[in-house]
Image (cartoon, rainbow, N blue to C red; front, side, top):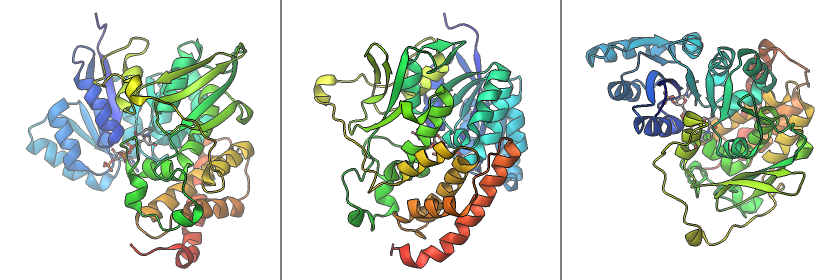
Length: 404
Ligand SMILES: NC(=O)c1ccc[n+]([C@@H]2O[C@H](COP(=O)([O-])OP(=O)(O)OC[C@H]3O[C@@H](n4cnc5c(N)ncnc54)[C@H](OP(=O)(O)O)[C@@H]3O)[C@@H](O)[C@H]2O)c1
């Protein structure tokens, strides 16, 4: 018996996590219906998804694409209502027509809809890690105030979620039985590379992850280890652990997705294929386990599990993230915003790979630490960091840009 239908609002439907979500949802028509789908600007892709899943509403964050969306939905003879703009996205996230929100927008742009879903007490499947880095304290307060259920959709945090004790539906590492959490990192496509070798890498190389197929921004973050840095900050907020209780270990096979160590010396790990459909099935079905379409692990074929210490000299982004988390206040928002500018410039070949952590570090040095607490303060820090990073980028470009 599947119980009452869950009504899904999927933010970032046209992305990689969006596709994995819809793959799992389509396997369970007796459990899930799609209430809302959103994208940034890819109207054709969004309308194709609407034709397949027939949601009540579809929205583009970029309001310039509203008319195209409305007309394409009408031309396809779909009953789906068109909406546009970030306020519309936040409205959909809070709408009582849906009970389950998948937050899979890339970047800090996802923060308003993520917070709205938490405040409205939804089951929140949270992939949009940048919004946690930007406003983690506010998000956790909104989850508590709205009595939302938060299931992390990062394979590492989802693994920790599965291994931790649960309180009121949410995982909590503050339990006295928990000693620490261990985040595993694949090491990305450049694991073992020297700084000299890293100097000339291209966006194509950075986006060719050895284990995971993901969007371009998170692929670059994985290659620079900033992804792990963002995940450390995310773990701190989601599970209530300080930096001294978070360890990062490189595990090239990406089979163990993360671990929790208990005071009795036990370590619990979650293992699985590097396929986000497992993670999404946990989020969609929890506490039930549902079919995800993922092949079973063949332990004998995997053969061995290796572990290494991260190379913090070649990949300074991880250390910068720990530094930002220790500083607190506005600094993680500055780190995240500078990283978004740096990754975008790298993907456009306006900044070399090693320029990514350099630009973030310079932006962090330029901006004062503000013990900001409100969302307005955090968004102001985010905007200022983007402005400073963009102007620093102009001064750095000559020294760091590489030919295509
Ligand atoms: N991919 C993974 O395996 C994975 C794993 C763990 C966590 N995550 C996290 O999940 C999030 C999504 O990652 P992804 O790999 O799925 O990204 P992606 O493939 O690049 O997709 C991003 C989605 O967000 C939309 N979007 C982009 N900019 C937006 C904006 N300014 N406002 C509203 N929507 C916007 C895109 O719409 P358009 O298509 O119209 O541009 C698209 O639907 C990221 O935070 C990432 O760190 C991803």
